[in-house]
Amino acid sequence: MITYLAKLGELTLNGSNLHEFERLLVKNTKTYLEGKKTNIILHAGRMYIECLEEDSKDVEFTLNHLLGITGWARTSVCECDLEQMKKEVYKVALKEKEKGRKTFKIETRRAMKNFPMNSYEISCEVADDVESLMKVDVHNPDCTINVEVREKCYIYSESGKGCRGLPVGSSSKGLLLLSGGLDSPVAGYRMLRRGMRIECIYFHSYPYTSEEAQKKVETLAQKLANYGLQLYLNIVPFTDVQMLIKQKAPEAWSTLILRVCMMKVANILAKRINASCIITGESLGQVASQTIENMTVTEHFAEFPILRPLCGMDKEEIINTSYFIDTYNTSILPYEDCCVLFSPKHPVLRGRIEDAENIYTEMQIDDLIKKSYEERIIKKFNCSSESK
Figure 1 (cartoon, rainbow, N blue to C red):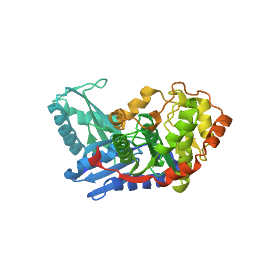
Figure 2: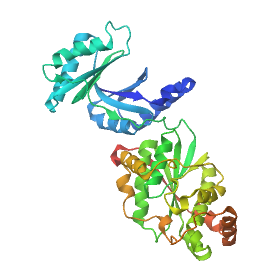
Figure 3: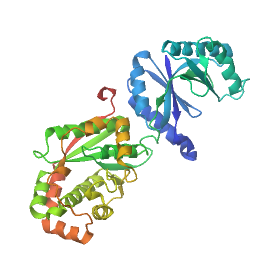
Figure 4: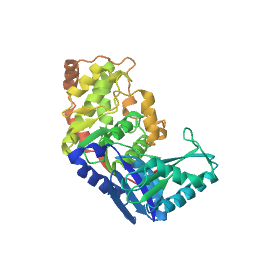
């Protein structure tokens, strides 16, 4: 059996809720690894996953997507006996030597306080034999060999970065307005990191938006499901709504009124799925519709709190996150979504609520909005290592 070690994140700081967070973390891990022969153990701020070699790729996929851990590593395991520890450390160092590493450092964490040596003394002892392979460099080593002395000794030199955050399901449910751009998938991911379960809604204006545009959004939904365990995507036909906006709304208001109509549909769906909030990918000042005044107009028509997790991020931060969650290359595919259709040359920048209400009322669009909602298509996505 192979043993992976995962370091728990901020959930360890949650006092009386700790056991519930840990229960969710184990439950979510089991969901990822359903059908695999694994053993999952939680102990003292660490989670250990024992698995067969043939399942190691699935375990690594899980640890790369599991929310609630700060990092993970594939480890060598031995009893807390100094001679055994020295042998295992040497084996790990030998593999590093074969990779061309020339300098090393030992970092020891002694959680077992009744072990007769302190962390520094352990590091010195296990480093002795390794010095025949590589030179010590405690400031800028080619590799760092970690030794964790717990109920057993866990040794590793390479580690993966965790997603951090809280386990999915530890918070309430939100409805994400998902488009094919860079922003909304990142917004969804950031709320998943806060433990929120999400469902998505996508507005599709065929034939003005292509089938490829819909497939692009479905790919993004799958990538979010890889972090959120399971996700539903509601595809709402919006062509008729957009055509009516084009015909009846002042051109400068078309984008903002489109956002209002989207919010109206989102209200209906959020009630249906018992969501606690609506999530958008809006980031202050990036485009004309994302001024404070225009956001205020949109929010006026919402019946739920609107969360905008990107409001304090710049574009570079958003792009970096999209690389991390593997949505960037999908988001930049050249298939436009409905928000780009019929965009005015000079959009209103500081919309007023009373003007928006008058335009919306004059359009008499409520029946069409309800029809769009009722004709939506629902697709389900599950976490899957085969989708990466």
